[in-house]
Length: 370
Ligand code: SAH
Ligand code: SF4
Image (tube, rainbow, N blue to C red; front, side, top):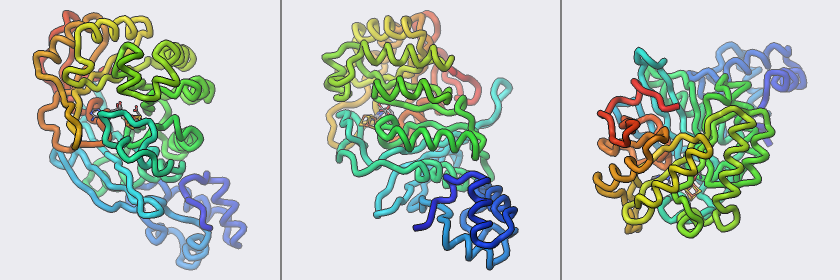
């Protein structure tokens, strides 16, 4: 069984080299190549002589992700990958570059999937439809970042600066692999936890545990409803972990890590867009000192639900006055993505002004909510 190269640190790769009768510094050379975006196969590690490549290749697997399809939007600044995994399974991975502005450095963000499918079964989400096929390994999660980095590199973009765990699956239902992948991204890829957001539907015990890992990632809670009756329907996991316990966990997480909590709200016309819901969300966000991210629902096949009309969205946002909030501008939603939140974070958005009205649209690169 070959070992995925991306989960090994430099010392482990030196050990492998030594065990194969190679000088240990061959392991260091290999380690340097693993996260270089232009290198997509062991054959591409030119510093290694062919015999060393062969010997290492028999023990190590260069990547666990084979890109099965690739599509572009935003003139190539957004790349969506269909990442092929073992067993003929695929997950979606999105890479998005935002240019530098006077107020913000350029960034390139990768949105990773943590599971093939999802067991939570939120009725507005395409991923949950077929249930859970299996969880991704840590290697499969970090190899998605490497594949996305290579895709950006081919377009003259990158390197990757940020990661969001907002693709397919529930990261905290795949806890060990998620945490291992966060550590690898920090230590090997140079993407520190402070530049990573993990989105969860609310696995409360795992939130408490994550707070103890010494990994200060931003936590985004997919709230979507401000009372248990509605949230039981929209996020079935709520029946096990109701809103009170979830908000307490999120607040404790923010206190332990010093990271501001995000609350995500997929806005669904006639379902969770009332002013009562907004007022209740406002109270929860205030109490948790959280940032609110409103995502008008992406329409999915077979669901009668969709985003509310613009006037209802405006009313909802007005009722959030006083809370730090952003809403995605749905215009030009060219790549429908499992990574709904990636789009919400990076696409053109409108700022919610203190009086509750919407400011003029501005490119994401010129403003930061976080
Ligand atoms: N399972 C995790 C992370 C993956 S889903 C979670 O639920 O948080 C990433 C985000 O996309 C979540 O906030 C989810 O609610 C949102 N999302 C899912 N389907 C969506 C849709 N059809 N429209 C808008 N956002 C959606
Ligand atoms: Fe799973 Fe998140 Fe989709 Fe809910 S929204 S089904 S938790 S991936």
